[in-house]
Image (tube, rainbow, N blue to C red):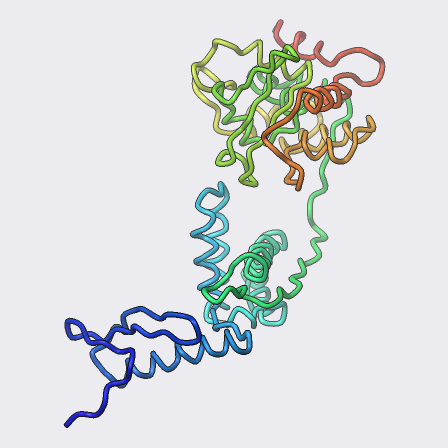
Length: 360
């Protein structure tokens, strides 16, 4: 006579399954084995995890690799996900099997030293640390298990490495802007003029599409609402246009069916090309990068006294108050703020730059 079967275990098609209720929770899953002893051990472990969670608030142990997989699955919309996956692949080799509550600066140090020996820049290492920090913060605040507990009780502080070689932004002054834009090919000059008057990122400008334009008849203007899957931070991006940016867009109407900025009737993949590099050399500004146009817009807004909140909205930075619904009064305020950077202070609109370029 065989020994008595443990309650909650059922054998179906030669494989043991669990169907057991304990502490108000139900376990219903396959054991993946035909061995009764193995099935009993699994059931006992799962029941103990539930007891620990319900009675004492003890979280089931999860590894960093499990957390990384969850992060990837939940961020399929993120434009920079491929970069994050590459960073996580390096991290998982070193800390993938570590319990999530054992991931901190101490256990990350061997990975940091390994990457430094490989000659990786401090900036690249910090990007990896930022992903770790994001995962730990999500695990301690938003990710809940079947017991209603967060994956992690508290997230440790992940400090970024000091980057003494980090390049500082180079906002253009007005004379430098004129000098650089005059040397750019016309299609790049139009893109640059739009960038320095909207604060859009390079990818947002290159991919800007006519279907994203929304008319605002009450204000006799229009705005662009870029969908989150085309924005770096994943949020919908409102692009408010001042008079100069609007003039650039109006000059390009009808030249392409889908994209605003094109070259030889084809969308443009990037701005930092040979045309840009030659122009900045000729203008005596070899240090200027395309992203500096966004910094220029932000610096001019601040110099004009535009509030921090309005600067955040105009630059497309993530903030708690961002929304896709704006009243006419709110849009008016943002348009007025954007128009404060149209001139250098002597009331001469910078629109003359575009007109001068279009003659050549």
